[in-house]
Length: 295
Image (cartoon, rainbow, N blue to C red; front, side, top):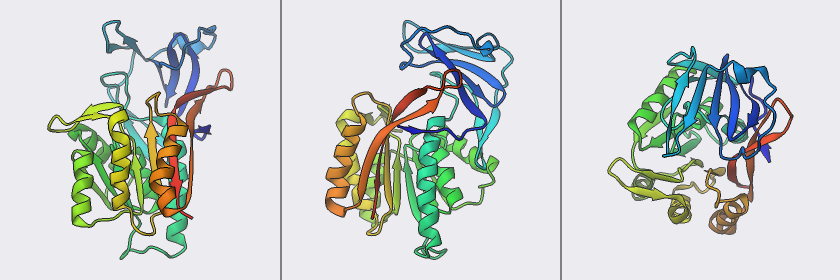
């Protein structure tokens, strides 16, 4: 398992009874988590010092209950600053477990740039699809890449721009686009644009800006195949994330081997990603990632 263990401003304090107890900066939140199927003693004092609690409804969805929580606050990770705010369906605007992937591709980008393969005239180009509030975008930009950030939600793209400003990356070479990811990639193929690294964090289910339906089990293989057509000849990496139970690491490995390693060479490895739990030293699984890296 790949573990995002370098956070200072975030931690999972404890887990029990379908919920995880988290510290986001100086604020304590309690949110539901489907992986937490155990009931264990709630000994950590933070269980009784909540700033926010998301209550799931038996009818679906849920709502927040707040106890002295600001409308917005910030946390940092290795020089990046993220603006957080609780919004619908329990989210805060950041998935901390993804930091383990930010570190991975950030290192690749820096190494490729430092060996002289790229320059201002020939930047290392990264495409971030289903880019949400820009955690991966900012990590790639900080490493030196020129990034194209694509998400179907105008609100999420605006949030990503705010995070860039807070992180001192307002003037970084980032292109923000509100667009359907599949249609964008199809247009990039026709335009002949190519990227040296691709990151995708597709939802299990979603709709594009014009109502386009996305269902990951039905669409992901064809979409990865489509994306291979916009990888440059000397592309460095491809990353796909999954929070869907059916897309286990072995499935991601199989797809990337068929579509990338089998045609381009390189190495594929997939695994669960997770976050450490402070109270017991165990790891809470938080989905899976598949990685392809060229030789």
